Length: 53
Image 1 (cartoon, one colour):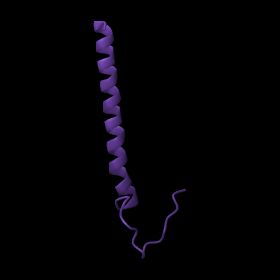
Image 2 (cartoon, rainbow, N blue to C red):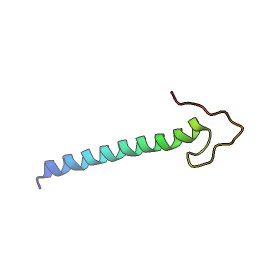
Image 3 (tube, rainbow, N blue to C red):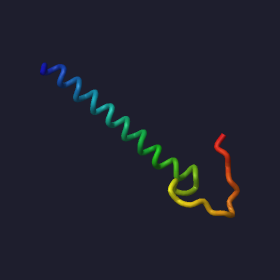
Image 4 (cartoon, rainbow, N blue to C red):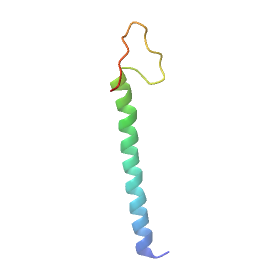
């Protein structure tokens, strides 16, 4: 493989991986905050249900 192509691909893949890590971490941190609970937990019965529209 050509040296420039190898360098480009390694930088490109690194950028894509870092972007995915940022998006995934924001998604997993913001979901529990916006729901006020973890997505797998049961909803308490005394809370009114909210529609997400």
